[in-house]
Amino acid sequence: MKDPLQNIQLEVKNLTKIYEGGVQALTDVSFNVHKGEFLAVIGLSGSGKSTLLRCINRLVDPTSGSVLFSGMDVTNATDEELRIIRRKIGMVFQHFNLVSRSSVLTNVLAGRLGYANPAWSLINRFPKEDIDSAIRQLERVGIADKASYRADELSGGQQQRVGVARALMQDPEMILADEPVASLDPVLAHSIMQYLEEINKKDGVTVLCSLHFLDLVHRYSDRVIALNNGQIVFDGLPSEIDDVKFKEIYGKDAERVG
Image 1 (cartoon, helix red, strand yellow):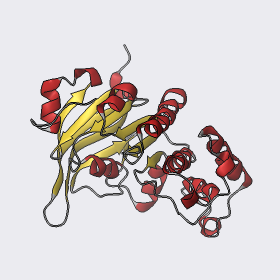
Image 2 (cartoon, rainbow, N blue to C red):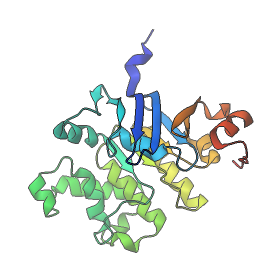
Image 3 (cartoon, one colour):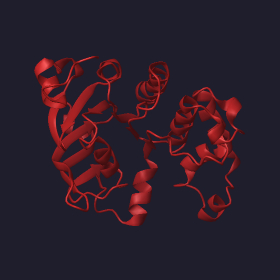
Image 4 (cartoon, rainbow, N blue to C red):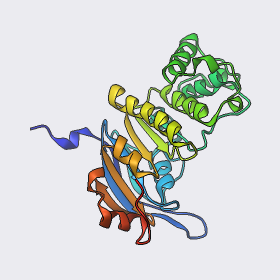
């Protein structure tokens, strides 16, 4: 029988984060993620979802605990080791995190900065194969015709597609999507989620995606982790979130809408 532990890609162990001023965002959070999973992270605003995702690639340094990615110790990695680890962990942000005055193509090419010659990247010089790859990623998300536009000339949905294309430029093994559709209307939200689903199912890229709406969780995720006040209160299948679990996650006064 195949050892299921061999397929574990991410190990989060006893992760705690206390910000300056004593605000405790995460408390003793532990879970594993298997390669190829689509894991939704849910909870109220302020429950610790963004902090958790940002601790995984150390955009935020945890106070204690550890994160292992493909056996590599993220929490204790040196700057050079972290650079290598981050190459394989793409990030999609709620507010897109694009350079607004730069072209769409330049923003997508930023996904190669972990691989590029530092001197070349300072003057936005990239190899032809990277430029060709960036065009292919823009074609994949349906906006290759916008390559020469400034990023701030695009709609919100188009900007998020640029964010997805930029993450794909890293040739990632995992994508962390931090509330990627929170600022989009429902139709655009599904379009972005469908790109993430395709990347997960067709490319085998593991996806960790924080979400607000349960209808999206049920439609796209294989598994759900719920945070409440920085602690895991649920870890299971979307179908297992019954009314009792819903109240534990969102509070006794919350009304279920999706």
